[in-house]
Every structure is written in structure tokens, then in C-alpha cells.
Length: 284
Image 1 (cartoon, one colour):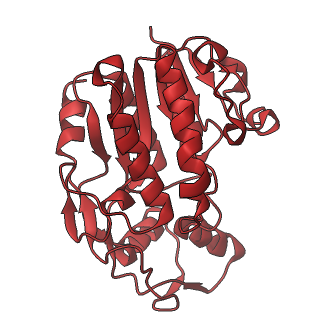
Image 2 (cartoon, rainbow, N blue to C red; image 1 turned 90 degrees about the vertical axis):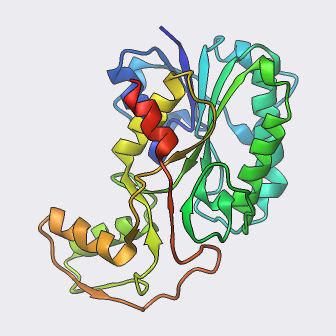
Image 3 (cartoon, one colour; image 1 turned 180 degrees about the horizontal axis):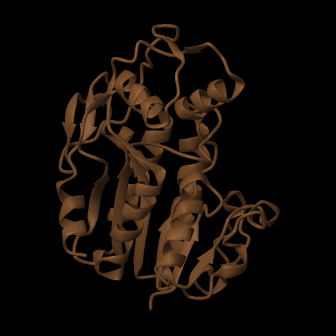
């Protein structure tokens, strides 16, 4: 059975991916920047944990050997989120992550899965398909897109690349500044009102447990490679998603729509085409 290296293991998605791999019986090598945080997770004693801070990547180190020669990598690590507009994504993260991944590939890793973002598409409205041109508008998305392009320029026969474009998600452990984390906090505090945007933006949402399941299933298969959207394929307004979220939990709070302005780095209406994902799921 494949030995899987998971970077960003203590992150929002990484935690769920590690748990999913363990449920399926895969041996996991988990890594993150701080062991003190990793120890707090239920999976810590069930994995091989190797601390590694990607801010200090050293290309003189053979990371393939350093991580016990994994059979596959699920690369979820990325520093500085959710500050999507900061230039360090391009200035610092892009070269660091390319150096790290190129080092692993050059030293023998044959199978890598990397988390990208739907923001790589840029300000395109409507249903987003993997074969569309990209035109990212903010540093985070620019850095991700350029990382993918640099990886795709490496010798194609030396490794398999699955680039997962993540759309929107929610669940326990998400950044406290995220919409649904703020909503949960308002409900917990008993607030009578929840301030949000107008809520008319159309998006594509999945619970993080489902995202982790899809990431795992994409990573473990070899039939489809390249860019793969990880999404529901079902457009819904943010306002409706929030209402559904409240109804599912039998919670009530007044939504103060229009309190916050709409973001300028996202189109108003977009969602993902999940045909490739469905093809992978149907072959399991």
C-alpha cells in the first residue's frame, strides 16, 4: 500500500485528509512547521510525524530521503492564509514551494497532488472548466498558478501531477475570520444579528469532510491527472448557503445583508464544472 506524505497536516484541510487516509488504512507521513501543534491532533500517534518549516527550505537537503521516500505526496501546505492579497505569496511562497517540490521530484518522488485554487481562473463569470485559460487577479492566485505552470514545464515522464483547484468550503477548524466561523461564533454568543455582505454572490460550496474525501480519492488514483476541479458543481448564492446552514442546525439569527461590501478580486457569479471529479469518483 502506498506510503503518503501530507504537508500542511495541521491545517484546516490537512487534518481531515490525514484522518481520511488513516481510515482507508494508508501509512501516513505527516509534516507541518510546528510539532507542538501537531501533538494536539488525534492522528498524531498513528502517523510518522516529521517537523519541517517550509520557510526554511534548503535545496542541499534530499527531501525525498528526509521524508522516508514516500510513494506519493499530497501537498496542502501554504503560508500566510487567508491574506490573499499580500505580495509575499509571489515573492516568498512561490519560490519556496517550487524549490521544495522540485527537490522531491528530482530525488525520486513520482506521484504528487497539489492544492490549487479556483481563484486561478481570475474574474471569469459562470461555470469554470479546467481547460479554460487562467488570469488570476491577486497574489495568492498568481503564485499558485505560476507554481503549477513551473511544475508542468518539468520533464513530464519523471512524475505524475494532479493539480486540485479547490473552491469554497466550510467546517470545524476553519480560520476564525471565515464566513461560517464568524457565523458559528455569533450563534455561540447569542448575537441577535449577523453582519454580512449582500449575499447575492453565486459560489460553489462543499463541507470540508467532503473536500478531504475528494482530495484523497483524486490523489490515490492514476487514471486522471492534470487540473481537476474539487467542487460540487452546484451554484448557490451565499445568502442561500447561509440560510441552509442555519436550517440544518435548527438555528436562527437575523442576517444584516449588505453590511460588508463585495470583494473586488472575485467575480460575482461563478462555480465549478466537476465532470472530471465525477469521472474519478465513478471509477472508485
